[in-house]
Length: 286
Image 1: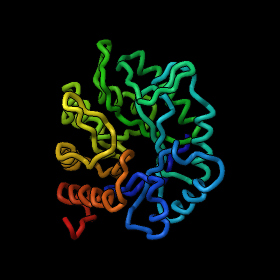
Image 2: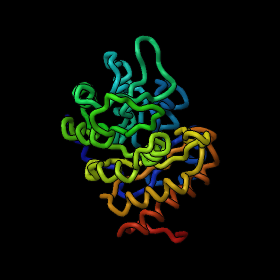
Image 3: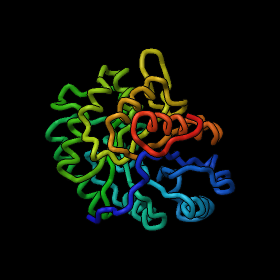
Image 4: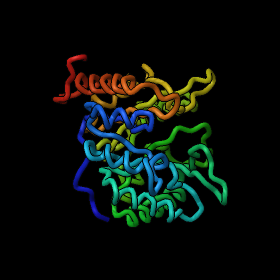
């Protein structure tokens, strides 16, 4: 596996690249240090979408995020899907590649959600084997993201953070720490986010996600359709005071607002970083 020499800029706050904003980004070149691309939105082989993405890539570094590797699935890995990722990597040279600790399909059925797995030694061996295949095929390390979930398995032998640390130790993969996902799990299941953060190996965190949830009163949905909540900002500050400076992403996928709203969320994240660390990336609006 070829270790990537380039990395996204430490402690810098990027945005998820959304189709509604691409023309504005190309025309105005806003002060954004990097963008994350969702594979499923940009994997067509021809036409306008690749040309737009190439135009963005001329000015900004990218990371590539996907939802279909099904790292926890029991079906054979979809090598056509991985070939699409490899083609995207060749075309747009993203600095990082990531997916989730979940499964997304079984048989001929592809689910509209990212589904959890039991955290057992058997699952660990299985997921490690699949990550090894993916990294060898892509010739690159991947980041594995913690999941928001709506059920838990009684069979689990360890918690999610411990499981992810074991994945890192056995495969050399990195961690995509989604603080909103961890908060959703705290609300839904009572899993302490601070304990989760305290357990994760910070030196292997390659990216942090911040997003907004949808409040259904009795439970939260990781809908990515709102501003980052006050609770998640407080948890991000808790993480930032201890972290090793991973790049941070503002993630917003549904009910997408004007680009200025995302930029204002990025400024909040930069202020938290500046106030919590010795980072040089301060902002006059903080």
